[in-house]
Length: 261
Image (cartoon, rainbow, N blue to C red; front, side):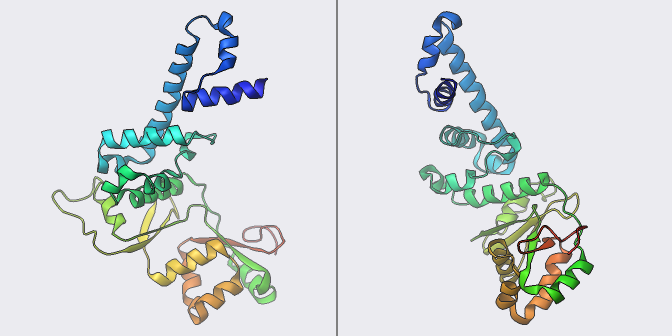
């Protein structure tokens, strides 16, 4: 009965569905039971909309508060929170907007949302540990076939057909007054936080392809097959930037920091 009550409660909060369990409790709750439920629903939805506004401030400024708030409410109604922290809510907002007809009038919005989520994720992620070069050298020489890289939790990739980084930057306080951003060129971005500051960096197609490949297949051998001789240049650069923060041996525990190989 408790599980059924909880299901009905969630449907009532997000979808406005009637909740029979509340009717059964009418004597205890009094005549205002439905009004109390409605007030709770409004509070939950308002809290989630406020969280989206705080996570996506540039997008809200870009499209205007009224449009953004209406869009956020529609998203909240269709995507109930399944996270334990408000900071983790709204990851699929960009995907939702991509397929939402009213957003077709502002085609730059989904990519801007994706960039803001990547910035937000990098800002709140835990610090990465230092890469263990000595252990890596031993593993690469002795067990290269089992070696798999660990990418930083702070790392995200965003590709767009326009300079979405410039669109984001022109809404920052340091942007010169009156200067218009140049959005014409497509861009591939790496978003990460090697220290305290989040960086949004354009990279070339080969670096972006390398990181995309590592996110799907972090093995050293596959990376060598992809990059060929360029692996000797691109791999150290990725480690230096902190995009790759460690490594592990397949079927073994993590071996990239202070654990033995």
